[in-house]
Image (cartoon, rainbow over all chains, first blue to last red; front, side, top):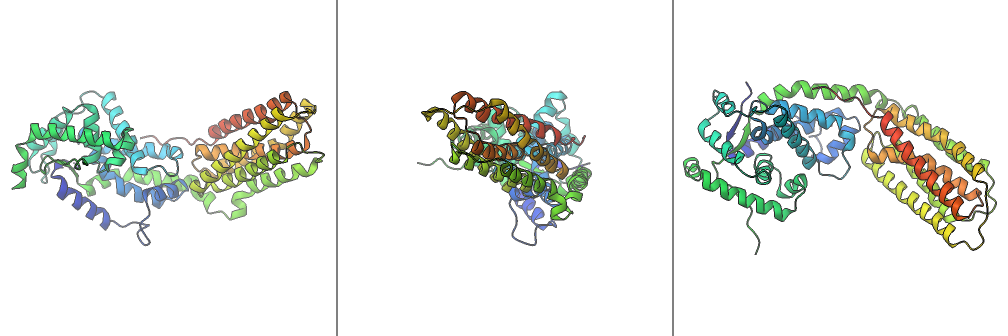
Length: 207
Length: 229
């Protein structure tokens, strides 16, 4: 089964970036093209450009949608998000930030998925994932997920996009249609609440 | 005072993904999309330039030939005609660029649209400011308009359809407006009419309605069937 888990953020981000950097990429020979350049090439019929985008974003999207739909469903939602990207690629406008666009698609796909199948997000999703050897503390992960679920929707979206999706605050603002200041304020409020609920977890991990 | 960057303590957790397993699981969808791109756009992209773009080249030839068939007695508004002609040229360029260079195609389409709007504004200004309005035949003007734009318009739409590339709004608009404005540029230089009613209907409303209808039609015929999950 696919291992999609909740774990320490900083180590995972660097490991993720290192893994992505090590992947073979059709465009890696020259200067690394931007996402927007790749999207334009993909729309122009360059299939390798799509592969590059796929490799850049698949894991980030899975990590982002997992708290919305549950770890077990995340790959299916990412798959649908990529199919939607392909179907609607004509709607991409040059100059628009690709990351904001794809995360918006993934977010809407995830929300549609949750709406169309009630109770897909069961806590035992996490217990099931606990069978994976790389899960260190499934109970802690479940607590984190429940705490994030308890946030107001606008704050939860910021946490998911900024922390799980790895977007910048500016990009989060573009996805949510909010100003940079509003996003920062929401993030601060959300993290204050998470600290209040999960405060005991931090020292445990830092040791 | 600046607000500090929002941070969350280590250990609260962000998602980590077993990427190898994830990519393996999503490989099927990646292959489907890659195959779809290759199957749709690959054959057209591998053709030589003239084989790819003959419809647009033919459309451009037809658009150039049209004004040569018309006499240019006393163009009431040369500036509007030039702007419309420029919009036509840019629209055709945008359509040619769209399949292989979508970003350039969009920029050219925006420039075409800007020139087209300026030309329409100039036409409106001509009708509003003229002191001795000249009467022209509405029927003849409409007939020449339709006769001038139909063939190049169909060829531009065919060019986009053949490429099987995703057609963005700007590309569809460029293809829809290119032939219309090219024809308008030639027709306005020929038509002596400067009455408000003639310009309002024949030179402004009809071209706008034609562009809207053509763009809608092009969007319909170039829409690709989605892949099923």
